[in-house]
Amino acid sequence: MDLSIIIPHLNRKASLKECLSSIPPAATTLSYEIIVVDNGSKEGSQKMIQRDFPEIHLLQNETNEGFSRATNRGLRAAQGDYFLCINNDTVLFPHSLETLVSFMEKHPEAGVSGGKIFNKDGTVQPSARSFPRLETAFFNRSSLASRFFPKNPFSRRYLLSDWDHNSVREVDWVSGSFFILRRSLIEKVGLFDERFFLYCEDVDYCRRVRGAGYHVFYVPTAHITHNTDYSEKRWVTLFYHHQSMYRFYKKYRVQGPLWDGVILGGISFRFLVSAGLLTGRKLFLKGKNGFSP
Image (cartoon, rainbow, N blue to C red; front, side, top):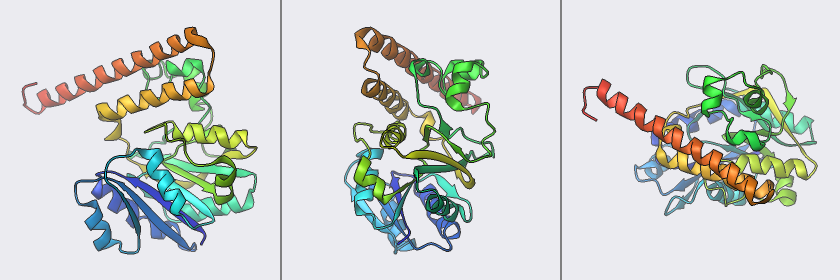
């Protein structure tokens, strides 16, 4: 089998159905299997899969076990030569999976590759980036510094903003929302680190891949659309995002309690500001729609 497609899933039935429907045109010449790992959905996703996609291998967790653990369960069950990890809120473009597998076949030095990711409005998501450094605690894709001062050198270095994202390029890491790896890599690098419940598991994995002597590539001719709206506007995902950021720094940046405190302070400040903006936006929308906050 050429490819195993692993999709962690929780409560986005309509998005998942759209994602699954986009897979056949994306892999017309490949032999593949689809493994959906459901993290305890409560809105009928399991019945939808069994009714509309009976060929899919459905693995069910009783509760939400997080992105890394769900993905690892799918990877352990996978039979393909290559493993593709994608989010349940993505839509694949035609032939995109054929493009990625072909690239991996032609580049044995590649351990992981990712493609170009579009937002719903057609703009490009910065899905290939440099590894985080100390200043990334303050200068990140969603930080205030990046929003109000988008041309600052720290954010531009991290997001690779000076590159047009239209050419194949070796990068530090690619987004786990569209992430292909070869089976032989698992034997050397292992599975995802399950201490990352949500977010940063892809950054960590690419770092381990590069540490094992493999390369990470961005392949812009493979396309998907990724709807991130819902996940970035919820308190719980904000918390897990910032928690994972700190865990990543603790794992790789052992520089003593002083720097730990500085990084924790920066990440905590970002969380509080992001949570405040989230709350303010919700109150504004309620007022705009005629509801009292």
